[in-house]
Amino acid sequence: MTAYDRVRDGFVLTAHRGAVDQAPENTILAFRRAEELGFEEIELDVQLSADEVLVICHDRTFDRLRLAGDESLDRPVE
View 1 (tube, helix red, strand yellow):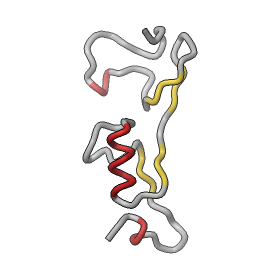
View 2: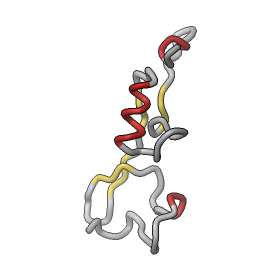
View 3: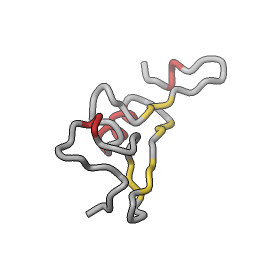
View 4: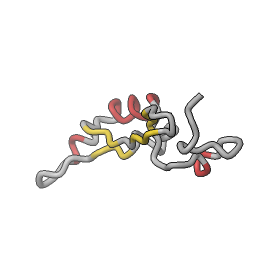
């Protein structure tokens, strides 16, 4: 059974940040896996960095993702 098969009463199941239980969130891998599972919609978060580069990331900082250093979107993307 796919995610689409589980849609009931006009609701559509949406993969929030992709298939995050099977791949890192907001990554191509998570988006592709969600598609393989039958999701028709993928919700993703887009932020604007200090130097106006679009970045697919839920938070303004990368703390929750356990990246090294104090990186945040308040700094330029290098």
